[in-house]
Image (cartoon, rainbow, N blue to C red; front, side, top):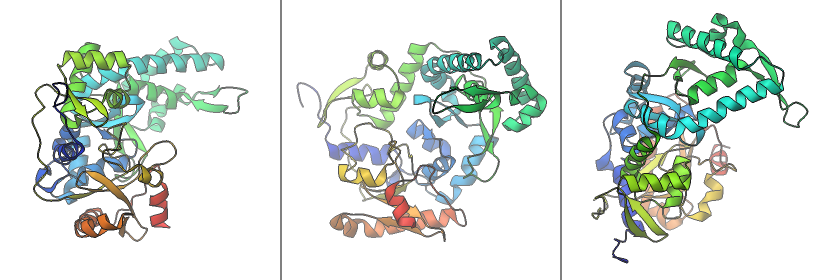
Length: 393
């Protein structure tokens, strides 16, 4: 105990991560819905990440692609939509209202104002015109069920209208109304990402009407989201919480107070866990390894990462924008990276020799699980990192 607060050391944090994030062998899940519920959100910027993140946590990784597609496109139990930090995630369907109210409303207002301003600056039609186009576009999408931007432009030709953005600037460009408007509608919670045009690895997608959800009080929604995240990822520092949510520090503190979060002592300073979540957590009985994809929600969950990531590995595993590449995990910490070569082979590297010897058998087994599940599919991360490039050269 420290000043009356329980101390949670690095070993216990890694144990919590392995169990709660469904990475330890005994903690693996049966369905994508269980995985998403355990993690709160799966990064959806790179479509392949969703399926690979699920596969790494399923008892049977071969089910990852068909079962995730079922959940996303048939049953609607998972939804791909804009969320924290203006980023696309996959959430359990029951969280759509919470995510929209807690993180989407403020961003949506800024995005719409920005679009109207940019169109006005370019001499394009005004907000009233845009509202007409929006109404017609949403009606067309309801009729079609799912559609690409090009298909919607057949029904509403004004979506093809173009305007010059940032005229005279070095970054001047031509924007199409469809691209900007559909993005705004996504942030506003009116449309969501639908089935891809190609395979599960494709970045081209259709749009679909967003599932109906009630309007929620912002503060209550923020408390609900933060409480759920702390159950999955606690303990976490205030900096972690502010970074993951994208909220102001005052909003984070208000939500922490609302849910009765408890302070704990971490090696980094003060951390927080959900109310009642201070009981010790033992490490899994068996050692475990995992091969997680680029942008995996575990690797990206915390801003302060030294407790599970050696700073010396950062230049190898992250790109210049802070996006993590494919990572190799051993008992709750990142120890290396992996990649898939053109012939389908899964290759990996662990720089630290002692760890490499200790973990080699389990990592090789995980590489075999992954390769078997991928079959003929080939995956290249959308954001490539130095080690991933080196391994595939």
